[in-house]
Length: 291
Image (cartoon, rainbow, N blue to C red; front, side, top):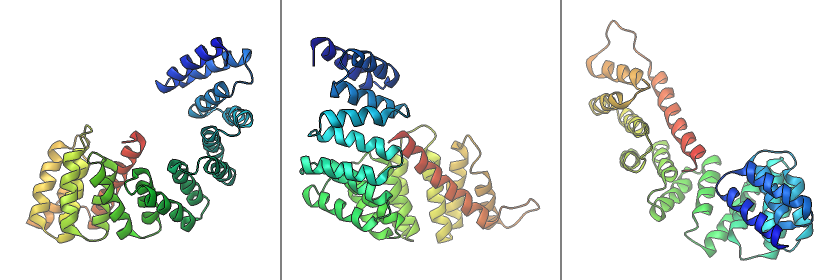
């Protein structure tokens, strides 16, 4: 790489790391006009394009991998582009090649597990993830992947065990705390669910998120049929719920404690659906925030 190309790359890389993908790509392309065979600039142009959702991102990454075929990082970037294009099997083959070049790279094994699962091969995915944990028992990325695979395949007990490990390793991981609370609730472990939602209420400091933990606590008490405890929680939740998502829940619980009134009362099914929607929304928010 020439001095000019190197300076352009460093500047474009800094922009990429700052999240300015459009300007990073622009600088990379300007430098490529002078140095069209530079694999680093090609990779950066492709990676920035991938972040921007541009259709030519894979082309730059393919060129970079062709020019630097022994670079496993270039292959992983290319695999990301192929996956984004829906070419799951091609992406898996690319990751396999990266692992051959760097067999100690557990991150590539986790990526491969995701690809195998996306291709409909959960048992193969589980095998790769278990290999990662044999090497690194505290690998959070592998544990997170296992939570997803076990949950999706109906093995809630194992999903819960993995989620608990993540919380033990990273006390501030809100998404794992959500998993623990939701899985305890699904398994009917109501004492554990109560404690998990209390923990979640304390650990999730995002604005307006406290209500989700309250909703989980209410749902726990509804399953126990502890109506007075559910009422106290619903009153507290209504006070902090700026969007009125707890109003029907409160009306239902009031009817259980004090009896039906002349006002229409939401059904138990309506309340259960509303609380399930609250859980799904909480998970979705943290998945989109990457928290």
